[in-house]
Image 1 (cartoon, helix red, strand yellow):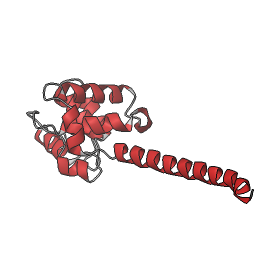
Image 2 (cartoon, helix red, strand yellow):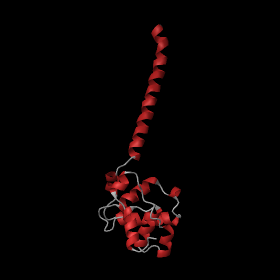
Image 3 (cartoon, helix red, strand yellow):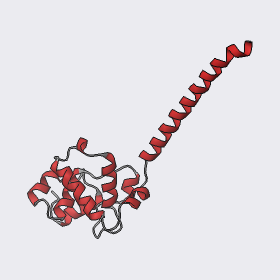
Image 4 (cartoon, helix red, strand yellow):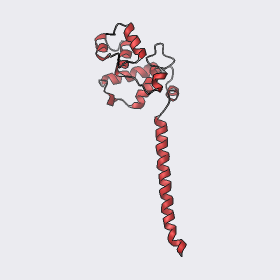
Length: 148
């Protein structure tokens, strides 16, 4: 009779323990998928689509006025990898910058759009800030006479 009275408590404890383990595993998996590496993203961006993907992202961000809240962080990370893709003739970003947590800036996208003749010189100067642009984008800006 004593064993029967203690049995329900063990069921509750077991269920609570299973719930805690389940929640912990879910959070661990979510955190792992959120911290994707450069190589993970690179495998998703095909060599033929890197330039198009980058241009589409920058165009849509430009259309929203380069508002940071208007971009999805995953799309930003993917576009950043596309900007450093080995298949690009002109690279705008480096893997090292990506690995330390840097992502494309509005300045970088403005330089990209200017390079592709999507925006004019007056518009790119509106968004160009050498402190906001990354090294490769700044080099392009300097070579095109955009540096102040």
